[in-house]
Image (cartoon, rainbow, N blue to C red):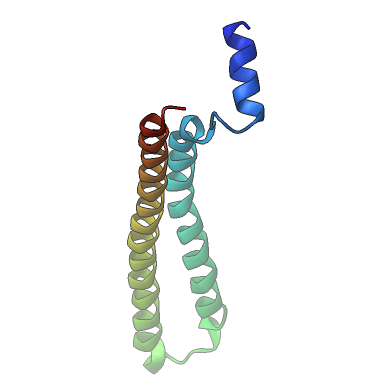
Amino acid sequence: MSTATEWLHDFLVFQVHISPAVLLLTYYVGALLIPVLVYDMARRFNQRLTREDWRVPDRYKSRLLAHRSRVIGYAALALLVGEVAWRMMFEFLVAYFQMHEALTRMSGT
């Protein structure tokens, strides 16, 4: 059997995983999309607060400013937690594939 045929056979019977090759690309796409999603979520929430801005008397403007600062704080927290969780998930996946590779080498298959 040729090398390409062996690889295709191993791929079709799940002896070869394609996930490690795609893992890095998927990580960076997600890491770039998380800030975009957090920004969009914060923008939408801020729009809900400012939609009623024209009805707010001047004495309550400071309360609206406090709400906006909370939105910014929560968005920053969501960005930090989202990025760290995304990174930890991919570190787990990399460790899983490394364990699989080590166990496969130990079994001799």
